Amino acid sequence: MKKGNSNVFTLGLDGLDITINTDVKLEQNHYTFKNQAGKELGNLAAVKNGYKLHLCLPKMIRNNNSIPFGVSDYKQLKNVLEFIKNNVLNLFKGKSTKITIQACEVNSTVVLSRKEQTAPMLKLLSHVLLIKNEKLFIACSGEQIGKRYKAVKNLCSGQRIESIKTGQLSNSRFCFKIYDKAIEQNITDKGLLRIEFCYSIRGLKYAKVGRTLETFLTPDSINALLICYRKDYKTYFIDRYWNNKDSKTMIRDTYSQPIYEEMITIVYNDLCEHNGQPLTVAIMNKELVEVDFKLFKKACERYYSNKDSARKACYRVKQSKEIQINTGVIDEFVAFSKSIIYG
Image 1 (cartoon, rainbow, N blue to C red):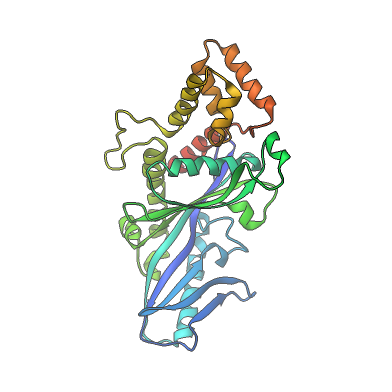
Image 2: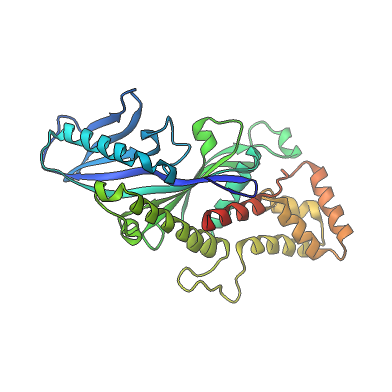
């Protein structure tokens, strides 16, 4: 567990997909793995040429997976390995099986400074991940914000994002899953953001981890995967998306800006186009301004000739009650990202 500024985060493994190649046909196509207390830990399902076993590693040693399986859990590796092997052997009655690690989820779970930061943080990250013309799969609910929307019963002014998922990135090694872990766990007193990379076979090979149960469930293999996650977080999540660099050359195009600078530029250009009418521009750019009011403030400071004019423009927007005011979201993202990358 690491602490960076006001954030605490944990780094570790979550779901594990295992293929079992065998000619044996079980009586059922689906089995549930449970511990002695009856808690579900995973499931086994029939697939072509055998079976697929999905296990949640944290649930094998804890009541839930709010905290991923990390370095502090290595002492439990022997017990986890024995549990899996014993259950598989019992199902297949000791007959010939080939067990291979197929995929693994690695995540950082961040405790945000305030629970109210979760929604704008997810909105920020959805904007960031859309910049490379790649598809996102977003689960969201509607929300009504602003005086104008009190006059109607059903129409929503915005969306509250609960989860974001990408397809496999162009490297075919992993995809992103980012979601509100507090909602999933029914936690109401704090904000939990989970940033998960789902590593494919190619991703596991790239990380140079063991592919059998015995060679994967070792401190060396798991450490290698956690190191790979930190590097990939920097190379892709920060350099490619946040800083808007080419993933191969790590150099920005002459005409491109980091994503947060582009957000400010959009608002600034609209202030120029609309003769500095702050409320009009804020409503036009509601999706950006509600991510972090700092974006609007920076654009005003760039547009107006003096700080007092910029301050008054920001005050007018805040007093309008048409925009949800979130602050510190970008700074918090930068702070916990540095902690994740550099440990």
